[in-house]
Image (cartoon, rainbow, N blue to C red):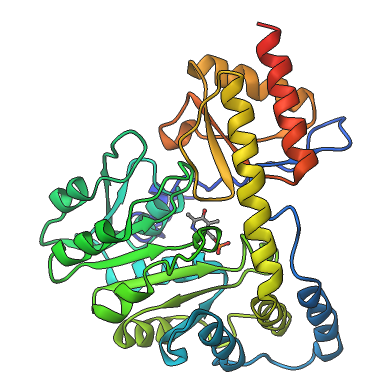
Length: 361
Ligand SMILES: *Cc1c(COP(=O)(O)O)cnc(C)c1O
């Protein structure tokens, strides 16, 4: 039957996001290195807090997330009044597009940028604008050149996914200072905690009115299954996000687990140090086998093969060995595979398998 019922403009342009695979048919002992999860898992205190939340399932959760915001403020030295919490940082990134962009507006991100950014742009009917990078590194001048009087949002992950590269703080500041007046810079800090001593843009948020930073509990805090993220930004933008989000967007269990995870700074520090150690070992091991990567600031490396065909063949071989990594052809990087840094045994297994693959050719 013909119908006049149609979705809003842009929605049918969305290509469904494909998450990292976690199963291989007929394989046990599968090593999942496709979603940048923390191999050490969350703080034991977060697991305990989650279990305790099971006693109060009949209670609605907090609407203002005050307890979690206070802990975030203590740990990261931010003003809790200007923190908002979301269902993963993904919810906040999406609400920013809903709140600030619509049909006729432009949402800017870079060519190898996170594949959710075009989805957020299309979902609100805005036009995605894709800016070239320079050798897998964000190019601030190219972003500035792409901005027009219709640009409303710029999504920038630093460190970036899937490249793992970073641009220095003065470059981010130069970008923020050069934007047109109606444009908001969204600094996606999903991997910020992996960079020692990095404030992920906090000083810039404090100095300017056109910058917001987002963070997540899904990566170093090991709580991808709980769906919690947060943002720190100008009061006016935080007020918009609070109007748009559901009043009970975060479950009580998620809030409790996140609060405990944030408090356990010793666990976070151990995860950061272990990641740095095994990331560098993995990158060096693969480079010795003729598979280079750019220096990574995150919890994964982007392994570069000689060709798209070789990357594809290596992926097939790794799967035959029970190892799942991420294909990134959809990010314009067909000659690469993104490999999450696992624990010591995982990294050894990857280098061994890539060595066997290379030796067999
Ligand atoms: C993993 C990731 C996120 C986090 O998403 P959540 O919704 O918080 O799980 C955000 N941005 C980038 C670039 C990521 O890689």
